[in-house]
Length: 197
Image (cartoon, rainbow, N blue to C red; front, side):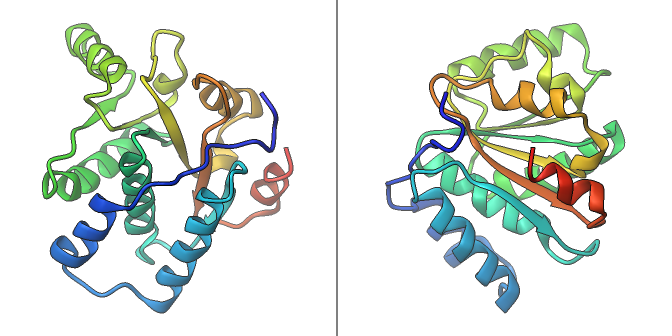
């Protein structure tokens, strides 16, 4: 895999446009619109996106992440969101499921506490492509977790994961690295340094 070679998104954004026009209950801020334009430019460039999204809690990082997920889905790719703790993963799942349900997108949750029976079913739906977004903790990087077509990786609070952990998630793709969006509320030097890994 070439490090800078990425998936080039090409299709019209049907789910993306529909969600903004029909389902979004509020107007995006100028800052959110600007960030989404920059992300779109990355996704359509043919190079791997590796972008840091920094903002205080409540600043709207989640809706930006979800709209980015919709771009991936519109291009027939899956997405994953890895959080450092089970509590945070569950919070993301609850919030994003509410949004996904509005446009009939199936998402899943995988943590260390997920029962074996649920895991087996989750793995099947993930491999078949039925699950479009998988949210979870370090459990996402287990060898048994296989995607049908992973195109976008979102990592929350990246500085709490090791380099090897992040890399393992990135390599769950067929030919090229997926696009990467990192979310953080704490722009500490360690997080910024990791952008150069």
